[in-house]
Length: 329
Image (cartoon, rainbow, N blue to C red; front, top):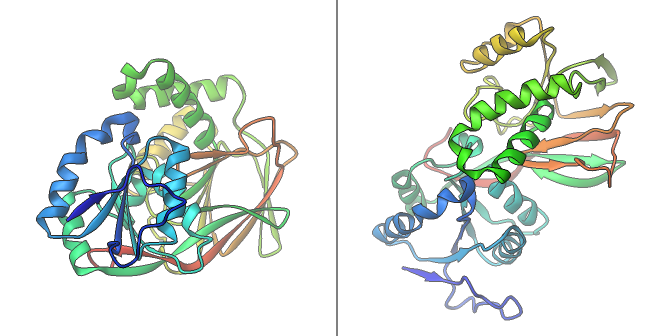
């Protein structure tokens, strides 16, 4: 049965004699607050499968990080119910733990690209997986700045339009939340705005295996998983446990070419396009004469004048964490 630990005092840890081995972190703010509607159904499904768990509901991002730090060092299994950003934030709290928990990912966010491949999009498959407790090891990406580890990621890192469009959409939805259902159209407007304000294309140098590529893309995606931007097959050939990352550099000459590439991406056909450069490796260095802003699984990094970064290194950590699964995918 489930026990609510929402108001747990973190200075007093729960006794291991009475504690469940599964912790559930529920983020009601995922999908712009729409995720809160699924809470009763989630609890009912877990209880239906006679799963013993401790339930934690986050009240803010800071509270979510606090919860993740607590359960990451205490529980064997941590089920995250939220969106890609929720998974990303929890991952970064549990990775430093010496004995990392097994993560379960229930996608109740707006994009759910990580859960689409590594987690669950429906409660029935989640309940079954929690009963069987089958897991697999997957790779994790890492961002370094001058040798200092800054962030981990499960899905993708993007530059260019991946940052500017996300920033544009977030700004408009914060001001006008009733436009939430129009997010794709706002995103299209964000692309036009990015071109109009000359945020793209941008100059970038990319080094892999002592080979340097100098380019002026509108979008760069470094990918660990297959899906990006709400189900687009950005990385159809990639595997999450092969010790490799895939890089996609998009250089369309005009908006019509960009639209064509986006359509091709739905079925993973963009790899054949002349405007796309595809690379695979375990480590990449990116540098530019201009500050680099990144988008990591819903979180923007270096996206302010308070910290300007012009060089980063992205590496893969092979099979760094275990993910709960219902089958060997």
